[in-house]
Image 1: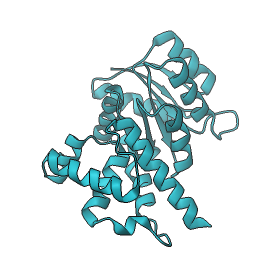
Image 2 (image 1 turned 180 degrees about the horizontal axis):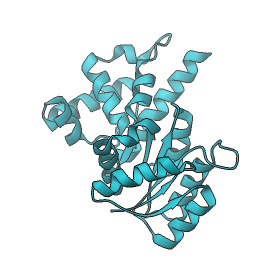
Image 3 (image 1 turned 120 degrees about the vertical axis):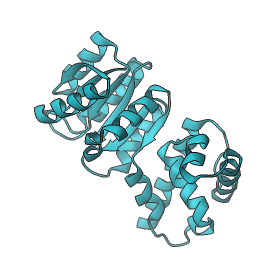
Length: 221
């Protein structure tokens, strides 16, 4: 796998590159801002770009905008966006237009080599990766007239894993149950939540996150 790493901090870029190199992943370029990131992606055609959301000059959402442009202009290139804060709205902005081959992780997770490499490989396999902290925050948030209250504890657990982007097989392995059991749980919880039961993995992740986001908004009113 070939990767471009974009972060305005040299130590962070070098740290990520070192971890990836030890894991057999080639870092073909490093970028310190969005413009150089886009240039490197155009010139090197990596498999995945690792992008910090907050980059120069304003340190707001330059990295996110660049990630969206990469997915639009280079659909064969996956994107793993990093954030120092839990920002579900940023994750949704990235997913709404291009739900496949994208990931969103909290920045402190990238120094867990196994987790980082797993996320990159899943993205390279056309999957979606969402940080479990974001999912847990949304699933666990208490709401008035909470539709999630109708879910069993196991269904809530499965819902969280679906929102992280795990396949039925991966969920079955995580919970030590059969895929058929996972399929039954997903069918039931989607029916309870009124979600589209479309089996497409990317669209179901997007549907779950959109539901959780709308429920969170309703709770804040």
